[in-house]
Amino acid sequence: MNDLRPPAANGTGGSHEDGVHGEDLRAAGAKAEDLRAAGAKAAAIAAGHLAGVAGRPVWQPVPAAERAWLSDQELPEAGRPLAELLEDARTHVLPHPMGNGHPRFFGWVNSPPNPAGVLVEPLAAALNPSCAGGDHAGPHLERTVVRWLAELVGFPHPPGGGLLTSGASMATVICLAAARQRAALADGWDAREEGLSGRPPMIMYVTEEGHSCLHKAAQLLGLGARQVRTVPVDAAYRMDVGALRAMVAEDLDAGRRPFCVAGSAGTVNSGAVDPLGEIADVAAEHGLWFHVDGAYGALGILADGVSSAAPHYAGLDRADSLALDPHKWLGVPVGCGCALLRDPSAARAAFSLVPSYLIDDNAGELGWFAEYGPEQTRPFRALKTWATMSHLGRSGIVSLVNHTAGLARRLAAMVEESADFELLAPVTTSITAFRHRPHDGDGDGDGDGDGDGLDALNRAIPGAVQARGNAFLTGTRLGGRDALRACFLHPDTTERDLAVLLDEIRLAAKSLRT
Ligand SMILES: Cc1ncc(COP(=O)(O)O)c(C=O)c1O
Image (cartoon, rainbow, N blue to C red):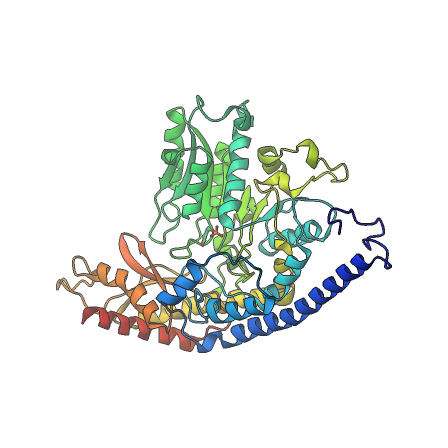
């Protein structure tokens, strides 16, 4: 058998009289049958998993034997049948979730997967395109979902004004690289060509509540951590724009090059939204690139009724770039962020590098997505995003935001009604920041917990709650104090779950004290 034989032009691979070819066809047919049967089984396993999530513990540590099974495997010498692999996944993988599918998972910013997004994942894998560019379904559908995201939050959307990414971390790298190159070109030099050495330090401004991905991006882009200024926040953890103004003036006086200010539309600690309009004013005055990290919270602009926070978002539409993660509040299965750009050519100027083997004369004016970011081979992220957004529809997305934003407000009210809890920040999006205060241990009666072990207690509570398996929350430091924070993203979370959460915290705290 000649394995190197090229396929026939008609795509059948040879004549039907060819015995070898007939064998190939039969083998391929059998494979398709296997795949169909295994695929039905995989779908049943996935559906069963999703249906059963709420009835199981939110999270449990992975037992040692299972951890060993998962982490110490050897590559099998001989290939294994599909059915066996599915059985392994069912018995060794699915029982050990992170917990974010459960309605009482309130940790970090991790949503449950939207079922429509889950449903189409195998289809994206079956097609398996690279969405670097070209004339096939992936890049065309990506144009649609990027536009939908921009339209949802009222961000300007010129043709080609954004791209899907692995998450907000990569979206931030793209936006800040565009900002860096724009500033350099405006000053008459080329950061890609020359690098940054010998130039005035390029300064970026972000509050201490800004996400770590902003710092990582600045470091990765060679700006240097020291060039990232920490702007103070007000009592509601929003950027102090007066302080920003003063810092920019000081840097200019010292001959440095302020080039970018990054505001947050939904911080991870408390869900705060910076005063975007005022920041936009400062950016406009000084020619700074205005980036907004709306990875988690940009969709909060959609809340209406009692949870409406739209006035907080005034000025979002004046940003140069916006990071908005479909894999957060929207519930698109993990692996989908989005960088939106007011002027897409800025990202293209920062990344386009088309070698001869990638020239596509039919690419049109916008070129390939790969010219707007560092990724060349790009997965088909648009399909799960399209499916999720279409399945929810605009009204479903608004309902999801209202429901979860309402839960955060309800928890804040419950916290304020309870003598043993304290609210630490106003609720703007769907995060409640608070802390447990079962006692005023320093005995001075002011309840501030100074020196009374409340910091240590609140630092220990998340782990103790998680271990109990009935709810999952995580902690942080806010305003110099250890805090608890609950982030609401799950459409099935109910008010009853909020009461369970507070009780779980009380029980966990009690167990820590005894
Ligand atoms: C506010 C905010 N910004 C940025 C990020 C980083 O996003 P990603 O993890 O998708 O890279 C996160 C992640 O939770 C976030 O909550």
